[in-house]
Image (cartoon, rainbow over all chains, first blue to last red; front, side, top):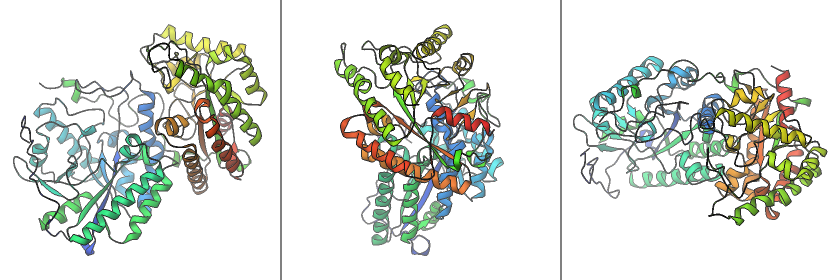
Amino acid sequence: MQEGAKDPGLYDYHPYRGRPRIAWPDGKACAVWVAPNLEYYEIDPPTNPQRKPWGKPHPDVVGYSYRDHSNRVSHWRMAEVMSKYGFPGSVSLSVALCDHHPEVVRDGVERGWEFFSHGIYNTRYSYGMDERQERAMIEDSIETVQRATGQRIRGWLAPALTHTPRTLDLLAEYDFTYTCDLYHDDQVQEVKVASGSLASIPYSLEVNDHYGFNVYGMSGREYADALIKQYERLADEGERTGSGTVMCIPLHAYLIGQPHRIGPFEEALRHIAADGRAWKARAGEIVDCWREQA
Amino acid sequence: MSLPADYMIYPKRGEGYDHELYEWSSIHTRKPVRWPGDRSVAVWLCVSLEWFPITPQDKPFRAPGHMVTPYPDYRHYTVRDYGNRVGVWRMLDAFRAAGVTASFATNAAVAQRYPELIAAVLADGHEIIAHSTDMNGTITSDLPEADERALIADSLAALAKAGAKPAGWLSIARSQSWRTLDLLKDHGLTYCCDWVNDELPYRFTNGLINLPLNTELSDRMIVATQQHSAAGWAQMMRDAYDWLEAEAEQQKSARVLPIHLTPYIMGLPYRIGALEELLGQLTGRKSSWWARGDDIVRIWKEQQ
């Protein structure tokens, strides 16, 4: 990015009308990828000068235990309904989860999920890191996930969405394929980096379960309905223009896997799977398919 | 500028948690739990009985639901007290009509100020859970140990005077200090309801038991924060029940549905009907076991 400039120079303007043809496999109209955030929040982390990890003096019992629900209860609920309707996960991973709860990571590996880095912990923020520190975080991510899953990570979603001006350039330098940190489009787009190349794959804040429940205050049924509407529209547009769209369903098990929400969510996945226009894919496959045609 | 070197060091990174308060386990692979009569879903009604002084304190923090306007905040003081005067009596009638018992997480001040209410709760076979002194009695690690000990001791003493000997504890806003688990144990309590990371009881390292009282399933979260209607709330409770019943059947292990109620929220004339209707529907389910918190903890403990 152009540090200090009014326009950070992340990408070129590229109007939605008249986009080039992007064909997804088997003539599908919309690539749908599900992104479970498998996270670990520390109970007593050090404080970053630019962001406090918890709202209360440690231990923040509700903050910590709310998220721990994922790793004791709700991960498996979420994963089961995804598998039931044939949706693989592309995991936004706090890589230290490989050390703390390898059982959860292993479950994703056994389901054939892809992993990318969401930082070391979701309580360690990138703000203020110097280049050496940021490289250490990236190298730690690559090594930890390689060891735990056998996969070389290709993607990045910054820990707690905290960035530095050099993050995207470093990702390209370390041969990452995609970032999930930019929300400017409904299709895969090129990101401007200092060397090499990097793609932006649409993740989503608007249909993220965190926004659905904790920002917009939706019920589980309203959130499921939002997912269906989002999907229907993107599939219609991809079908009409021949330029394949991308829909991401970003999840946190402690939210979507609550007992009053998981049933309606299962219905949304059933609907999308039954529609027939969705390419149920992993993030890396979507970016590769786009890159071949770009 | 860079971050201090220790920001990149992770001393607790290793298998298990980054603390020793309790051990990891997945609910889906634990030894199965069974409720009496082989009912698969324990429905646990928990009502908060709160008294908010019109003089709020911000140390350690101001409790959710506390005063909002400059002093004197008649509006919030009286709206909250409506729950203790009117709303909770509607709930007691609703529970009686449905033939169910509940837990009442009770501020000591409610027992001191409204002994008639405590007598009625106990007379109907409900459980009293200790719930701090009053709504200024919040806890965090900033609270000095002597003050926290006094807060717990005073809470239990006032409830004892009103005829209740609680086995359970609920902190205000479920907020604890590093010391709370040990202090609750020292004061003879069996369980607390503060940690929302599970859907069955589990034991802390110090022997105290956690009976999770899900924040997401509370009327405060659904109706007051997310602003859903009472009918929307009831629909969510039915969706939760359906899921838990099916999961219990599939995994051959029982589940708990905690329904956390606030008299000044769900006890209003236009909302109480949704609660009554829900009680009618769920008592009609053959899989439901209506249990107080101490019942659930006792039956669970016998099976460990």
